[in-house]
Image 1 (cartoon, helix red, strand yellow):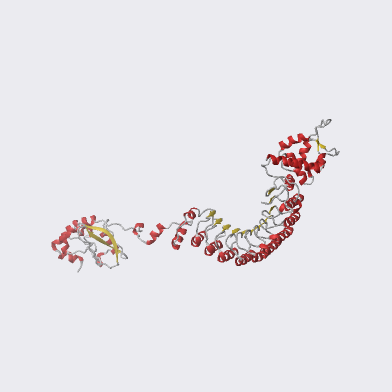
Image 2: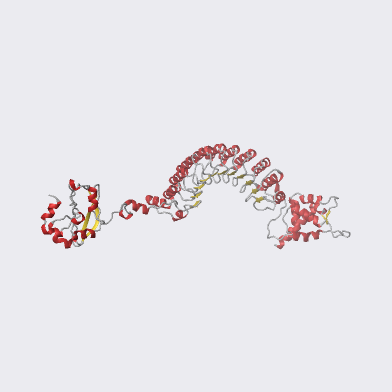
Length: 592
C-alpha cells in the first residue's frame, strides 16, 4: 500500500496527522518527470537535514517525565492521544544507523502544500542539534591521558633516584637529592652501606655534570664498590673518585681495576684504608701495568707487606702514566722497600711519591738513595718515619748533589742525628744547580752549624723552606761528646757574650776565622760594627740590643785606644777562656 492510500484510510484524522521522524516518502512515480535528488531538496525544510545513505542519523529522544525508551519513536494511530505527553520529549543526540534502503513516495502535485499547516509548524519548530565533525578532548576518558598528566620529564635524576629507592626499599637521602647536579659531590661518613651506594651509582651513571665524587668512610664494601665501578664504566665525565675507608676487599679491587681498563676519563683514584693485602696487590699491579689514563693513585693505609711490595715494584717500574703514587703507611719493610725503590728507579714519569712509614730500615733507605741517583723525573719524595740512619742521610745528600730535579725532600721522624741533618744542608748549599725548595726534617734535632748553613741557603734562595726538630746545645753524635755546648733553654738568663764564647768552643774557632777576615793587618782588633757583622755572618741566635751593649764592654780601655776598637787576641788563649766560662756558669747557676 502506498503512502497516499494510507492517508485516505485515516479519514478525519488526516487533518491532525503528525509525520514520524523516521518515516520518509516513498519513491515517486516514473512519470513524475522529477529525479530523486530534486524531490529530496523540495521536501526538505531549512531546519531539517536528510542524512546520507552511507550513514543515516537517528534522533534519540528522551522523555522528561517517563522512563527512557531504547527504541526510536514510531508513529501509530494511538499515539495521537498521547501527543501532549510527547511534547515533553527532549532530543538529546543523534546516533548513526546502518544503511537501509528507503523508498520515497511523494505527491508531487501537492509540493509543499501536501502537509497540513499544523504539521508544517511542527516541522519548522523541530531543531536538529549539529554533530561535531571533530571530537573534543573531554569526550575521551583513557588511561593515556592520566599518565600524560602525571609524567614529568625530570632531567636532574631526582625522580629516578626516588623510584630506585622505592624498588630497593630504601629511604631517599635528601643531601644527595639536593646536590645531585653539583660538579663536586662529597658524602663522607654518611653510613650509606652497599644498597644505598648501589642506588646512587645507578643514578650517577647518566649524569654529565659530576666531576668529583667523594664517598669516604661509608663502608660500601665489595658490592658497593662494584656498583660504583660499573657506573664509572659508563660515565667518563667523573675525573676524581675517593673510595677510601670503605672495606672494598678483593671484590671491590677487582671491579675497580677492571674499570680502569675501559674508563678514559678518570684521573684521580683514592682507594686507601681498605685493608688491601697481597692478593689485592696482585690485582692492582696488573692494573698499573695496563693503565693508560689514571694520573694519581692513593694506596696508603693498607696492609701491603714485603711480598706485596715485591709484587708492586715491577708494576711501578712498568707504568709510564702515573704522576703521583702514595704508598705511605703500609708494611713494605726491607724486601718490599728494595723492590719498590727499584721500580721508582726504572720509572720515567713519576713526579711525586710518598713512601712514608713503611719501616724501610737502612737497607731500604740505601735503595731509595740509589734510585734518586738515576731518576730524573721525580720532583718530590717522602720517606719520613722509615727508621733511616745518618748513613742513609749522607747517601741521600750525595744523590741530591747529582739530581737537580728534586724540589721537595721529606725525611722527618728518622734517626738522622745532627750530622745527617748537616750533611743534607751542605749538599743543598753546595749544589749550585739544585732546585730544592723545601727540606722537611720534622722532629730531627739540629745544632747551630745546621742553622748557619740554612742561612747561607736562604741568602741564595729567599723562598727556601725548612722544618726541623729541637735545637741542641751540642751535636748528638759520638764526635760531639765532651764538647762544651750552648744551652738553648730560653728561661735561663745568659750573657750574650758568653754565648759567643761557648759557640767559639763548639764550632772550632769558626768565629775567630771570620774575625781574622775583618783584620787584614793582624792587629787582633776590630771596630764594634765589624764585630757585629762577624756575628751576623755566623748566623747564631742572639739579642742584637744586648750584644751591642756587651760589645761596648769589650772595647779596649787602655790609654791610647781612642778609636774604640775591640781586642780579640785573648780569645786564642783557651785556658783563660775555659776559666772564664767556668766562672760564668757558676755565677749563673747560683743566680738560678
